[in-house]
Length: 381
Image (spheres, rainbow, N blue to C red):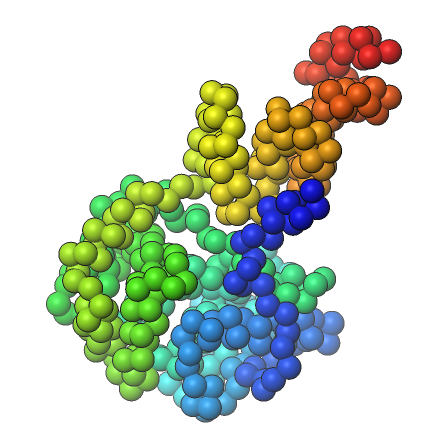
């Protein structure tokens, strides 16, 4: 039972859960003392995750990547506006021709920080090695890593796939060739880039496609193409070089067909829950379990998959497992009255009447479950 729950909770962390590793320091962190160690550890771990994919040579870095953190918003705004000419809330990477002036600047405590730091940290990493990368690689991977979150309590990075762009991508008629060649004179890339949300969704979807399977030919094609990126080249030259390298592995026609099939087959968290619920309602328990497990894989800290998996365990008379899953759902913020009622039913079916009554009495405090709870309590007493 414990093993089953651990699989649900951590299945998405297998590749991206990294603990701090001893080694060379790639960052110079300038921060208040109370957060200095946090940012030092976080950034070094991010570098490791990024470079697992890109395999850039750290020896080519002219200097450590600089990160500057402010606690005070006024100081942060003054510092950024003096260098950028405008205020950027949360976090911003400042890129200059002179490497010693480049830095990621962060306002600790800002509401925007948690969303912006992962994005800007990747941009800083990429541009340290390739200042003018193909736009789809820069934006696509920045969005791909947006959900790589640092847990300060555990000193670890945790990754859950960023699917916030999936709905947008599925509603677009994405031409992979156009996206891959954005930034090149061989396409209408400038028009595409002007539609920032469209381009971001398209870039993310291409990266998601290439990264979907670790040992696939598409992942190999992607990582192999990084070898032709040049720090001295402009975005157009690098874009064309990567595009032509990718075509050594497969034609653009087969890539486009496989990409279209991949996006059409992806399901959002909400879609997985809906399809799982439909399967559950029609008695297709195995199919329902598969949908809910996939949903837990996408969002391991959302209560819904565990609640429904608990219902399935209850239906199959696995009462101890059902209760543990209900408790997990509670831990992740499920409506308490709903879960107390479910636990009451489960305990009653398991012959644990005193325990069931305790659960149902609490559920009865909510008027939505009062009548049913009281009727069941009267039968159990």
